[in-house]
Length: 192
Length: 190
Image 1 (cartoon, each protein chain N blue to C red):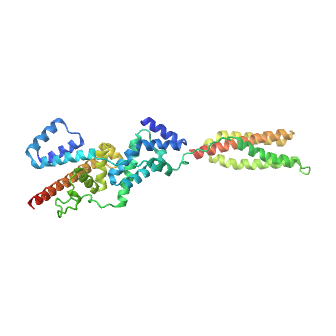
Image 2: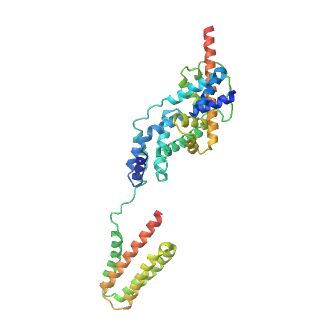
């Protein structure tokens, strides 16, 4: 597919702009998935994915065929999404702050009482600072290696490793708290 | 093994880089440490959830939206269907004007030829400035210009039929247009 992608890029650069639809068709799912996993909003994810493809089209002459096209376009997607989240200034945990191990109040309205772990994990990921969230998404959901992530995000390899471990630790603590609160809540219900 | 080492091994497990010996050591620790065992179970649950998390389908019209948003003219190259014709027509037009002008009985043909030669001579000086600016590609250009100038010099000093002069000058002017255009094109493209 790499040679095919490069030949499509060559055709576009020679004036056949309609050939870009092949690239969109090949990578729209991967780009959209990455954007969605970062922002967890379908409409925003589609807008971001569209912006990614437009940026890729405008900078096609800069694509280096020594690297996979998928790597190149997903790098654009990662950086575009991170910039979007930073500008949006979504409320997340501060980067270096320890999360509190106790949740104040046991109100059923807090979504952390949701019984399905996937939804809980999704919310926990959403609450992570973007610097940690991007690592979780790129490593565990997009299957990139430490080296690839380091190149994607332009950060040192050691930082990738430390932050990823930290992100996992935060998610684990969040899930453990949920389980504790759920068991406490269940125990209270049983007492009633 | 202490809990810190156990946590490090859990990270290696999540990285899918744990060796069989390390896995065995981790299992031993989890059997005796309840906290680490609980943490590891949460990590496993988390990993499974991350890897199987579904994303919604992208809308059907996404591709159409992208294709409508891009600038289709960005990489279009202008087709040079009439390559060379334009230069010939311009040169022919200049000389046709002079040909018609010299039909006027009141005009002195030698005077007209003298003006043309002088005018082209001055023009060639301007080209000389451009030539020095494009000194890297000047070799061919210099000899072409000198050849043309020599032609003008010879023609203006000797008896020669008007038609032959016009044809030679026309050919020289056309060649000059081609050279200049080609060099400027290469300069722009580089």
